[in-house]
Image (cartoon, rainbow, N blue to C red; front, side):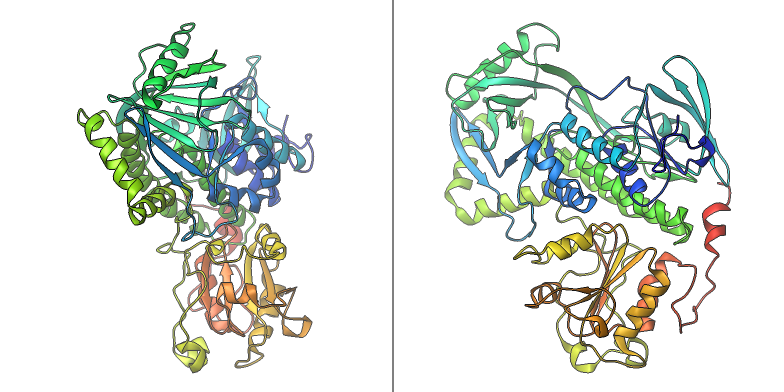
Length: 583
């Protein structure tokens, strides 16, 4: 049975996107595709939702993404907010690293410790509100593709096979991905270590307001507090017991944590344990024709810094708005090329950072027991060093420093030639303030005061063009350009006039005290183009037709802005979306 936003009885041929995998990545992709009006089907080979959690850390950038998706208020009450990382060595507390987001402003300056099962439940609930329900016990067996569609073979739990045709297939089916294997995408990298995870009640003297790392002299362990009082996620980097051996894991954790923390620790009966060998691998591309992969289907790595789920969710969000624009004919097929272009380098960087984090977390060096207490005591004593370490650790984990400055979708500051850019000399000399193209707009200090109107605008699934009221320029001026853009591109572009009223431009966005314009660096007539995922794509000091056309050019929109002829042929979007060449 097919589930779509229009109801569960639509024919299979109506499927626009088939999503394989109903973990956090697949659910995010399905939610964002459905939120943009696409008919989505989600299948998963498992008989039902997972009962245990691999991932437990949701970092600030993912919380910002949840805010844009409109689900953050469903997730926050389910977890515990963590703002510290405390390190023990030689049985003593050596240093506590407090969260320091001074250089990375965000509305969510913490990591939310929440079980993956809870995250998935919140995502499924949000997806169901859009009329899409997961089809459990339905396995993707095989597929083929041609220029117009993907033809999938599905096997139901009762053995019945079904043929499904969709415009696109998105593989979010984990580390053993059928989609990746059928495409012949090789996971490149290396095997790594065997660790143990456990969820258990712990009787310990430490306060559950921090993630704890404890070195025993030969190895290290980690403790992460759940929202449920007294319950922790435990990680052993050198397990001796095997999962499933009654009492062995609890005894092992109790003994090692007691040695690492320097006082008696008793670990109660674990609700779940798992011994696993993780790998550090990734694919070199994430798309083949009408088939794309995301999450663990594209890269697998150490859980040391809690990046796997967060990275996959960011990928799904990045992909969904691009796929929707192409499928709906608002952009050319080349837009999808930017998915691999933007995300593969980030995946490669992630492997490097998690490899380093893995080495630091397990720290098996023979001299560690001697050198480590001294090093950590130095970090504790020297405040500038401690702050530098705090910001370095947070910068790598939080996702707040991820950007797309070199992306094909990012347009540098407009040309200063008056005839082309229409810039005013005085404003052209002003230093550029606010978010630079390629960075997240929420990196600007937009979190003070109310800010609800701007956050609501970021939840709009379309692109956003922000125009600062009061500008004057050639022709009908910035307001006239904005009105024209809103009329022509309104299906995929939200045009807002910051701080103005009706005559100043379309859809006024209240800013009575100029705090939003100041934060975004908008002078009168200035503009900022924001991608659907909240990253700045382009900006300028005066909105004119030429500069806006240049900023929108990477999308290959079907119709040029009124009054401007394209500088090169623009392909018909229907052909780009449905008559793709064979690969």
